[in-house]
Length: 277
Image (cartoon, rainbow, N blue to C red; front, side):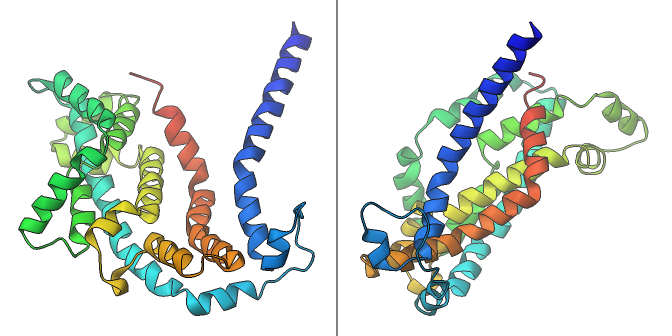
C-alpha cells in the first residue's frame, strides 16, 4: 500500500513538474529571445540559448520605449484601484459573511452569477455613461469601478476566508462596544491578511495588464499605460523581435517580482478560502 502511494505521489510530482515547465517555457523563450539578435531568432532549427548574449538590447530598447512614463501612468491607475478593490470587496464580503439582512442569499447568488456575464456586454453602456458626463478621456472610468464592490470574485474569495474565522471574535468585540467597521478593520483584517494580499495581487495583475480599458477611455499618447505602450511599440517595430521581447520582459518584471514577494500569502489565501462554504 505504501509502495503504491509512493508511486502515485511520484507520478503526480512528475506531472506537476511537466505542467510547470510547460507554463514557464514561454517566459523563458521571451527572455532568451530578448538577448539574441534578430538573425538568431529567425534561425531554424532554433537555438535554446543565445550564441552571444546581447544584454545591450535592453538599454537600446529603453531609449525608444519610454518605460518610466508608462510605468507612472499605469501606477496612477493601479495603486488607487487596488486600494478600492481591497476596501470595497472586504466590506461587501464582511456583510455577506457576518451580517443578517433580507435577501442575503439571493443577493450573494446574484453577485456570484454576475461573473458569468461577459464584460463585452457592458462596454458600450458604460462608455456612453462616462462620455455623457465628459470623463471619457481620463483615468477615472478605470479607477472608480474598483470602489464600487471590488469585483464578484474578490468578494467571494474574502467572504470564504471570513467564514473560516470563528464568530466568537466578533461577539467579544461587540460586547466591548466595537462597531462593525471597527470589527472588520481592527479585529478581522489582520487575520485575513493572506486573502487580502491574494486579492491585491490579482488586482495588480488585472490593472497592470489591462489593454481594453485604457484603449477605450484613454486616447492621448502621453497618458498611455504599459499595455498600450507595448501594443504601440509592437506596431512600430513589427520586425524587430529582439526589441519587442526586451520591452515585454521589462514590462512583466514588476508582476513577477511582486508575485515572488507575496507568493506565500497568495497560496495560503487561495487554499484557506475554500475550507468552509
